[in-house]
Image (cartoon, rainbow, N blue to C red; front, side, top):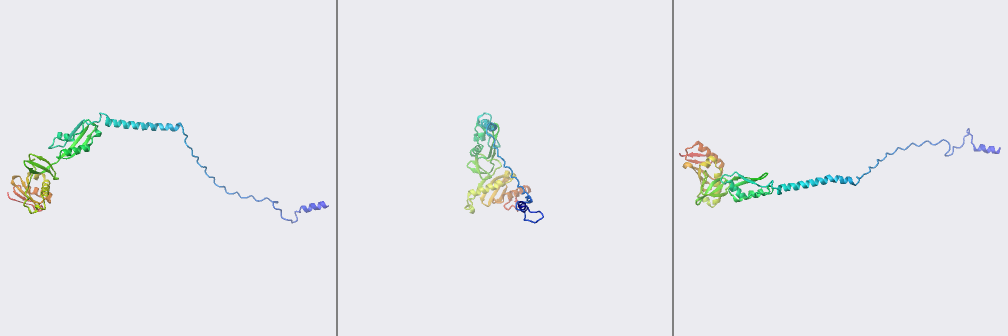
Length: 290
C-alpha cells in the first residue's frame, strides 16, 4: 500500500489542479521568427595581370618597325633636300624692273647657284638687293621648286628732282634721295628753292621746305604732274608750280595738297587757255589770263 501511495503522490491526477508544469516541460516553445537575411556583398574583382613573356615581345615588334621606318624616312628626306642633286639652285630670275636691268638685280642678289634650294636664305637675299641697289623699294625672293629662285622687285619712282651740278638727284614720294642721274627723267619737276630771304627761314629750314615740296609733287594727279616743269619754294606757305606753256599755279603751303590737286585738275579742264591758276584755297580756286 505504501508503495501505491507513493506512486500516487508522484503522479498528480489530471482532474486535480496541481502545480504548473516545470520549466522545460509541457508544450514546446513557439518557433522564433527567422531573421531577415542580410544582402550578400559582391565578390571583389580579381585583378589579373597579363602574363609576361613572348606576347609582350610580339607587341613590341610593330612599334620598333614603325620607329625604324620613321628614322629612315627622315634620313631619306634630309638627304633629298640637302645631299642630293635633285633640289639645288639652277636658275635665278628677276622681274619688275624698269630703269634697272634684270642682270643688275641678279648681280646684287648673288644667289649661290648649286646650293641646296632649302638652305637658301631668302631674307638675306632681299636685304642684299636693297642695300646694293637704292633704287629698289621692295623685293620679294621666293623659292620656285624644284630648281629656281624668283626675285620680284619694285623700283622707286621719282616725284621731284634736285639739281646738283650737272646732275639730278631723284627723290621719291617718301622723301628718299635714291639716285643721281645725268639727265632729268621726263615728266618729273625740278625743285627751285629760294627761301634765303624769307622771314620763316629760321623756323622752316631747307630740309623742312624740301619735305613740303615733295609733299606737293607727290600729290599731283598724273595728268598735272606730266605738265609740271618746276616746283618753286619761296617759303613754307609760298609754293608755286611752273607748268608747260609758261603757265603758273599758286599753290600756297603743302597743306590740303590732295584737295588742291583735284581743284587744279578741274580748273585746267574748265579754263584750258588760262595762264595763271590759284588753288591756295582749294574751296575757292581761280583762273586768270590767257
